[in-house]
Image (cartoon, rainbow, N blue to C red):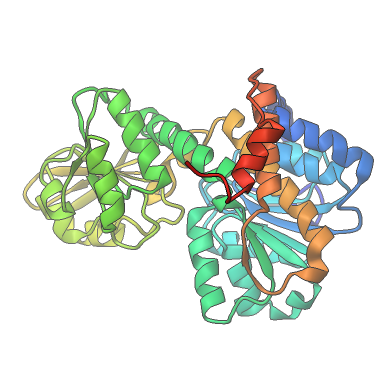
Length: 424
């Protein structure tokens, strides 16, 4: 049964707010960059008068971003970007303690998910902040009357950026969006170190497997795949990388990973992890080749990378054996275990990325919102990079928070690098 603090909220239980507030405060201590931005926003109010619609994973880290945007003057409304990623206590705290309208319930069905997206869009936002581009896609499909109000948006994840670039290539994207995912202080750290650690964390919490000695098949060697492969190897696993891109495959091979086609890897893997952003990466012919006890997990944004419908159709029985663990028994008698309904396992079964890495990603988001307000008149529809100077500023602030100092170029060195005349 859901409760609502106001007609503009839908959360599981407002009584969870105290626990959620404690969780938000715990994360805040590891988010010093966002705290510095919040302090400045409080004074300068760069977002004052702007309605901001956010469709993000509703976690304690996201809550700290929402508080930063609110401190900057934004009128925020938040919904979940994945049915299983919501921390219900955090959602309750945002509504009860901070007056931020929030639409998010862990385990919500598809109908509720899109009802929540539309509730956020009902606010007629000026800025969108998306994770996976469902908010933007809904705007462009069924809520086109609202697009005239929008000055710009930002996108948090690789999958969303892929969708947005496809929209832009088709001429369908009708306002400017900053690909926050492509900022160096996002994808080099959040995707690699955050996804790498939190994916193994989610699988471990769901299964309690011993990683040492396991053969782990990582499907996709982008920044997320790099992080997962590295962390699995660090836990003692034998890692196999599956790729379709020759450059990525070559890099994996030179990093010392075994690189195989999935048709060959299917028969030897103990744990399969998909991070490709593509559909049916693990498919019915792969399931037939898998060993008894194979574990399937996904850390790509959408639950399409594992063909669970095909697995269910081929299985003779299906049952829940643990939270977030389903057992599929095949006609041969072997069992295959699928985790978290094929959704983001790091958020379905664990808590997502550590706050210290989300500190940079959400600092990027906050600065992107400010930049959109400042530059709205100069941007045409399309996908943009976060300006390099903002990206580097986040990196500088993060280093300072860690007590790390770096060198700066001398005047002579700057001149040398800017000159073409000096040679041997």
